Image (tube, rainbow, N blue to C red):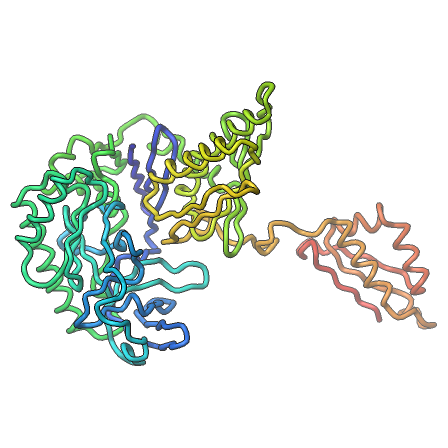
Length: 524
């Protein structure tokens, strides 16, 4: 994998490239900033017992949503309800901006949840929070559509090798560290070094970690938590207590691992800032970070802008000639697989199987690239052989395994459908880079010219018949110029029939500034 960072005066763009293909894309604009990972001191606005949730004012445009399972109650040692019973990565966490110590986010972090029943029964939210109460909380999801950000009071702080969770007394190990001896060694080391209350998660990059490295991380993280608590106590709500890193250091924190061959930066000042940090804290990665000095712009050399434009399109072509159609709805996304121009040879089942198999990897890539979350329905082409369906589903699972976001897919149904979900953390790419079409209002279509013309004729039929007064013998119709052409040429015969019925002459006046579906009738 390669990481490309393009820096300009107005924004910073980051592209993750795998085999010269754009795999993920995110950006940060100078006038906009995300909130995930930020820690706030907020004031409870509303407590909703019926939803077992609360809305907290943190000083943003929309109040933060806080579910009861995401509220830490003193005296309990229960992990947040956001975590699954088996394992779950902690939320993106913030770092001390002043210390400039970004660390990579590890998608493989696991936190075993205590087996039910809980150590203490969950209290109803009305017994935990009250309106006007001030609390410290961390953002776990960006505002999406009409919803405010999601939050938790379970604070998580990352170091280079460890994630510190002050309210949880547990030591866990990344599931991507597979050697059992190494897992046990790391766990025993952290247990012996950690002081007092608080839990730690050992990241994938900690494989081979020395005792000195672990101790350094623990000391820093515990001091950082003390600083956050101290600042939180002294500040008034609502206020920002700790801001997450900018997109460049978030990229280093989340993605600069051994899987990355090269990280290119096309801005000398930003390159020097990154090198200063990496030279001090991550010397093993110095050789992988390079200043882009090629003859072509960085994104141009990798064809990023064209690939990005294609990621906003509804249809995605496969190499064989088949294609995907990706339709977004309010609550789900539907992906349809089609053979298209791919006709195969003599065996239809083989053609269908090959198309579905090729579609699997592209679907997984599109989910990551477009950041599609929520419920997803994949409509594969129907396969008669059960073994082919199993191979396609296995291929889908293998492709989804590379995705940092949590996914859950059910087997292919008899109708050829796969139902799956993907954790939604931020807006999808279409919403981030675009906005609802002002002309069609997000419908994706407008009425046909003939449909609009016939609606107008129907409205004209309800106009009262003209009287003896010359003014009452006319009707003025204001329409879009294209509708005027249809009425005066293609549908002129029908218009004349209406004119005879209402005993009025229809005078059509074009209004080029009107919407094509808009019209008005003035009948004196």
